[in-house]
Amino acid sequence: MKVMAQMAMVMNLDKCIGCHTCSVTCKQAWTNRTGVEYVWFNNVETRPGQGYPRRYEDQETWQGGWKLNKRGRLTLKAGGRFKKLITIFSNPKLPSLDDYYQPWTYDYETLTNAPLQEHTPVARPKSLTTGEDMKITWSANWDDNLAGAPELARQDVVLDEISDKVKFEFEQTFMFYLPRICEHCLNPSCAASCPSGAIYKRAEDGIVLVDQDRCRGWRMCVTGCPYKKVYFNHRTGKAEKCTFCFPRIEVGLPTVCAETCVGRLRYIGLALYDADRVSEAASVPDDKDLYEAQRGILLDPNDPEVVAAAERDGIPRDWIEAAQRSPIHSLINVYKVALPLHPEYRTMPMVWYIPPLSPVVDAVQGTGHDAEDRGNLFAAIDTLRIPVEYLAELFTAGDPEPVDLVLRKLAAMRSYMRDINLGREPDAAIPASVG
Ligand code: SF4
Ligand code: SF4
Image (tube, rainbow, N blue to C red; front, side, top):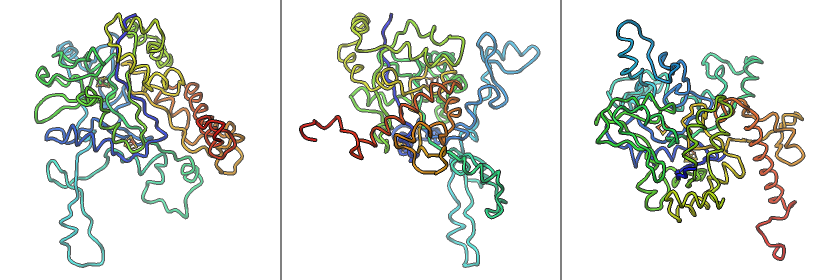
C-alpha cells in the first residue's frame, strides 16, 4: 500500500439552484483576463442539456472526429503516408469557440435611439469579441428554455391545440443543475497527453496544475481531457485550468466556488488513497464496476493500519487528522451517497456528486400530492421526476441500481427529518431532559 493524499469535493445536487454565483466568483478570481473571455473553470450545466463545451460527453462522435484506438492512442481518421505522422502528432479536432459560446452583448443603441413607433425594435446580439452582429443558435445554459420538452420550444405550438403527445412531454419535463470544475483526477489524462510534461499532479495534495513556463501550447490536453476542463488562452498561447484555488487551500481557505456557493452544497476535504492500486482500479474490464473500484482505493483514514502506512509514507500527522475530519470519506465510503461523474472515462475523477432526488410526487396514487411522508415514500420513489436511468448515465456508467439505492437513502433521510420537524420523532440532537 502506498498512501497518498488528495484534495476532493462532493457536491449535493439537490441543493443547487443554478444561480451561477460560483461561476461568476471563480471567473472574477481566475479568468477575468484577455485571452480567456470564453473560459469558465467552474461552470453550471443545465440538465438535460448539451453541456459546456457542447456535446463534450459524446466521446465517440464528438466533432465527428476522435476516439481511442485499440492501443489507447488518439487518432484521426486519415490515410496515405500522412497517417503515421498524424497518429503521433495530430491534435484531433479541438472544440471551437462556438462550442464553448461566443461572449455577447446586445445592440442597445438600436433600442434606446429608435424613434417612437408602434413596436419596440429588437436589440440584436453583438459579439463581444468582434463587435459584429451575431445569429445565436446555441449558448451555455441555452437548454434552460428547452429542458426535456423540445416540442414546446417550437414557435408554432399553439397552447390551446396542444397535442396529447406534447402534453405528456410537458408533464415529463425535468431539469436540474450540474456544477462542474476540473476533477483533479487520480489518473489525469490531461497530464498523460501533454508532450511538454507541463501538466503535473502535485504529490502532496493531488491538485493538477499547468506549469506555464513549460507549456508549449500543443493543446493535446484540451482534447485529452474527457471532461474538457483544460482551456487555451489565445493571448498567451498556453493552456490553463482550474487550480482548486491552491493559494487559498494552502492557507486554510476553501475554494472560491465553495466559499461563495449560495446553496452551500460543496463539501471539500482531504481523502487518502492507495496509489499502488490506481491503475488496477482504472483497468477493471466492465465500465459499470468502475465507480465501486474507485471507491475501493479510497482508504478509511480512521483505520489504524492506514494511519500507520500514511505516517510511513510521509503524510504529516495534521493532514491525516484533516482526512479523518473530512466529509469526503463519510459521504463516499461510509454513507455511500456520493457517486463520481462519468467513471467510464477511467481518469478516476475526484469531484463526486450526491444525485438529485428532487420533489417526490405521489404519481403512483395519482393524487399529484407531496409524497414525502413515510407512508407514500417508497411507493412514490419508483416514479421519480428525474429518471434514474438518466442519472445512471451520468454517475454509474448506466447501471441504475446504485443510483436507486442512493435515492432511497436520501428519501428515507428526508422523510425522517420531516418527522422530526413535525414533532413525530424525537430530535436526537436535543437531550431528552430538555425535550
Ligand atoms: Fe485533467 Fe481533465 Fe482530469 Fe482535470 S478533469 S485532472 S483537466 S483529465
Ligand atoms: Fe449551484 Fe452553488 Fe453554483 Fe449557485 S453557487 S449555481 S447553488 S453550485
